[in-house]
Image 1: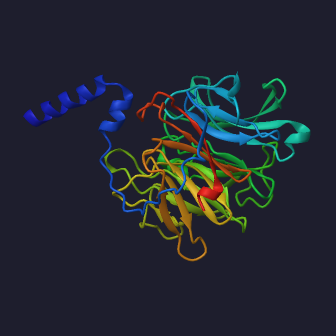
Image 2: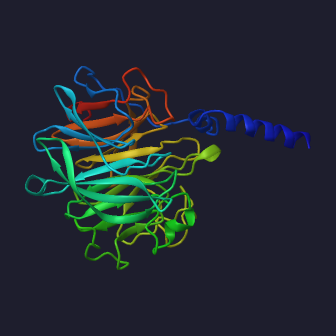
Length: 371
């Protein structure tokens, strides 16, 4: 009885502290054996913008300026020379936990149709859901108009909302969704939760999807990154289990119709008929991977709790992983490559990190420094 009383007191204490401290309190320490690479020249790394609020994803405009989504709901315009030069609020964004304004993708024909696609969390009849919304974007005015929801009712929750969107080399729109805190939905092909989705630019199922709908792969916990190598193969980062048993984060090679097994398959435990990860963090390390991007056949993905940039080479034979920028910028979220530059964002103001005086930041690194 005495032990039960002590446990209750501890839980009450935890419940009285703020969410960021509670989050850190329930996670075990992690240890990493990944080789560390030190960049030879730091002078070329440039902070393009600071004091951002949880920047989640990045896109580049034809004029070279950048668009960054902030999870609380703003779309920010960033110049290489002048920093933040514009800010507009995306309507109907609901922010709580891991939800909010997340992925961004420009239509492949953006220069003629001005379409951008945003992944947002919103409320519908008292329920938290996620949507893909297409807007017309004015470069001259930095404004959004003509909103059209092309995909509605993606299951949402305080945690595990997915959020990555990208047009693939085949011209179709790919989307990652989380299991919305209900693991059983991940392997249910009648639900959009815990999936990779593939659709046309108006939200219709892409040809050759195997389930007669927009599902491309399933059995995912909370995937938040999409990237293609030179062969057109799709790679994806996925969060493994969390809490005191955190670890087993994954780098997956995505196959059409593939079952990635969550929650039954984790790490090296792969059930018959499911697909295991190409790499995983093991039980003693936590990457908490964010976005992923490709430089040819070299992959870069960010680590939130890992506070590193991870580089993966040897995709054809034996994938090998290295760590860069170890704890230099804190939690790293977005990773995108445009015009031979790797762009990163930090995520230190998300309630789970330690924010510095200029956080959060948008960072530009010439690719030549990384090779």
